[in-house]
Length: 193
Image (cartoon, rainbow, N blue to C red; front, top):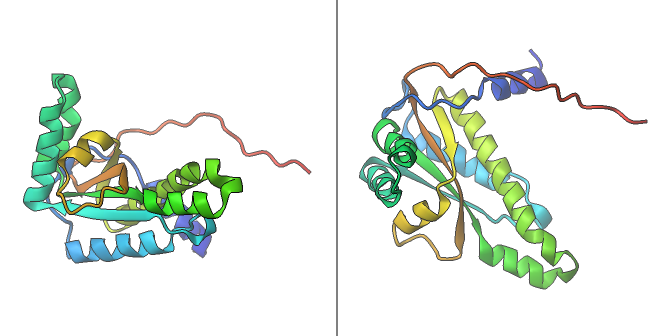
């Protein structure tokens, strides 16, 4: 199988899996996950090679405490369902950030592009998120991407720098059930010569 075919197979296998067990599969360790996420944060392309991506991995009591605080901060029982599931059923979460200090420096250094730099930071964060999700899937993990950003920021340990803006949470664990069926819209990529 060619490298591209392998990549596309791995990308296609990445699915949203909500049914998780709070454990790691086989011989995978949290250090393996940390190494993969660290490499992705380092190697994901960024505008002007600015490298604004940051990440932390929550596991154990910290993972449970953060998601418990998120759950309690949401008043609606229906709204509490997903964060409670993350707390109770997942092994951990990768919290993705962008460092606003990097974005502000770019705006000062390259004023002609100043208005675009926040979007560029969002784009590179999204790239790091999907790269991480695909990699964790390839390791045998299941996961789902969440955006409880303000709630998460308020619940995180105080060691997190204020300049880091929460972008997303990749909740992960061992799949407890296969993903649901995925449907596709017609969305052909066209070629214009």
